[in-house]
Image 1 (cartoon, rainbow over the protein chains, first blue to last red):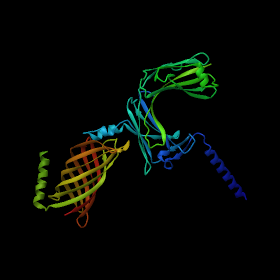
Image 2: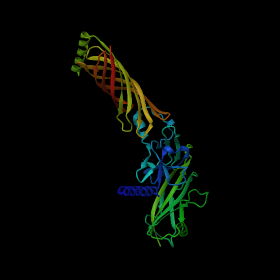
Image 3: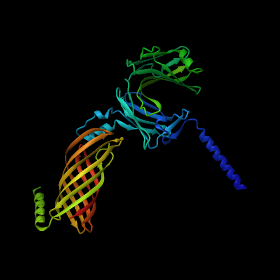
Image 4: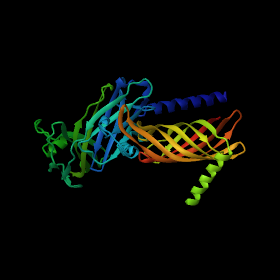
Length: 278
Length: 169
């Protein structure tokens, strides 16, 4: 009788533990071997935050699962990113080990970002690679279909000219004027601003603003975020916030057709932190 | 240097005058590493044969194939190649064990691949040295192991570790 009670207790604990682990609200994962490539929604980004480092990352979702935060983890499959371009144009005729070894530095395998983001795979390249084509290949073991050729070209970089770091703005009175240069005239590029706020009341806010209200103007080089826009975007915002303004120049690439859906984009991102007070 | 040359010539001539020649062939699979951190190790396969004028000296030729030194960053990028070697060999028989050494030239042709695309080709002649040990088995068979060092094959040195399976006649 006493042992029966202990068993019941153990089973109850197991049930509680199972339910708690199943209710993890952050994100969950499924193995890649259960998902066909044409059921995958791929998000691939090539991002340069300055001229020194470019990060490539990729995430896969199962299109058959409606939840947005269920990602596919890779087992034997792998992502690789390359800045080499078209291999068929290469023709080394001496020092093969030296030349091909140097070439191999421009190809990197994307690795899971540890426990923090286990379903996000990334690699870093030194430099900003402006105008260079990135090729991201997804290689699958066995009979699964690979997606070897997702490509995107890195757009021109730019400098954020204003506002100054830690400049103070009043939510009641001050518009925030954001300026950057040089502007792009490439119609393949899109400009937008991402504004995120972390406030004294412990809440966080995030909103995207188009850089230009005129669809004919790709890149105006300046954008004024009015107090009205801020109040509207961040309804109920309590001032005394650290606000990060990120200006993004984005270019869409061509996703390998083997994926079910998704996108590959290259982005130049520059950001500045300002302070928002009442 | 003159003394060394005289010593070698003396050994060769004395061997020719005192011993009957010996033919041998051997196959020799193994692993190969390159002196370049960007590449993984590859495999090597050699088939070679030679003639010993004396128990101590001989001439040897062989075909060597290097298979897939893959780039560490991407298996689909690799270098492979083949070539023909010619060299002199020295042998020190100790009962059933024979210590071997050799040196010569290796004419090679290497090719670089990236997936289905050939991205480079190179050829040349490089010096090599070898060391090894063989055990003479019954029925003129032999088994052993050894190592070859090829200097500057398309920009890198290659070191191999082989197993020998031989036949003497």
